[in-house]
Length: 503
Image 1 (cartoon, rainbow, N blue to C red):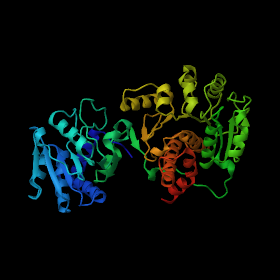
Image 2 (image 1 turned 135 degrees about the vertical axis):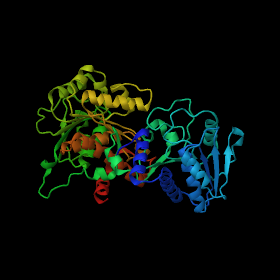
Image 3 (image 1 turned 30 degrees about the horizontal axis):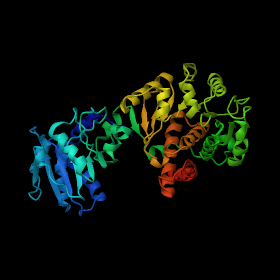
């Protein structure tokens, strides 16, 4: 699914109005009905509602919501915030449609701010996606006051003060919403960690925007939905055998970190690979043979560190390297040999990323369109660069993948998957319980298995990251977020596959 810019959102509205032959206030009515329906499912009429409207169309949305919620027997208190600005046409139309039982209270100075009931739901309808300058003055005073006094805030379309698709100036005030209900599609801002305190838990509601516009609109930013992921899964044939589903090689583990190799190997096997070979330091031989009996093992000549490649690479279909390998000189040499000699697709994680980050020579040896990097933010900084904000990081991510013709999974709450073409896909599965050691090793195993089975690198990234997060979501239902460990994610990979097959 595409993520549209603020300008494209306005164009989608305009084309919808033109194609359907409706007035703009009719589309506003449709959007407000969708929002009111979401709120009605979330909060009962016993909970009072305080709606704060700005002078533009976001405020117009708030006016319609006030009327609709009043009709549904909610106790609605309506506040119009204006420092003298002219109101929009649709705002004025819906102000005149208000029933007399919902009298608006005007806030024209800071002293006009009301007392909010303890259990009230505050609806933020001050500013929408059209905002182009920092929120200051009276509006900033209202926002800061709401952030301090509201126990539950729901933003209409986007939290007021937050820019949709570019960095918000630091001097502007931003509503800190508990929930954000966006129309039709989420905004780019929702996927960035720096905005968590403002966006809260976000949801989308359909409002029937022009299908033709949405289909034709160009965007480098997308988000992953389950329906698309289900279509990627390759069905198994009756007469297939273990050779049908690829042979993966994992180069993992080091002294004190053999567990990383165990996690990657178990995840790889649970992700459908036909055969798996693990090469690990000799010290891990007994551990791996016991913990992962389904895998074949090549003990490295070096007892504590990886120091060489297998004698023959011809039998493998994909290579995963990095979890737990350390940054010893012999390991760096082995990594250089791998990059210089293999034409196999590579999944590069953890210390393998750190080794490449430390060497321009290794970067220059990266094969084109054969590599998936899976860094966490600090590894990304070492490999690519430090960024001043999340928008800058996205551009650096796109540029790195374009220059090196590689794929990258920048891990996080909404992991960002970047392609050589400059596209970025945000994942929508997973939860905070996965913020624990070893889950990155699990992802390496999943991705390596998928690539070995013949999925393209892009398909492997999209399916693998979503599957990884879905297994985490299923694990959350069993063990919760706080107690979750990486092994829980592996144990729920079968259920994740079954969930995608059933849905």
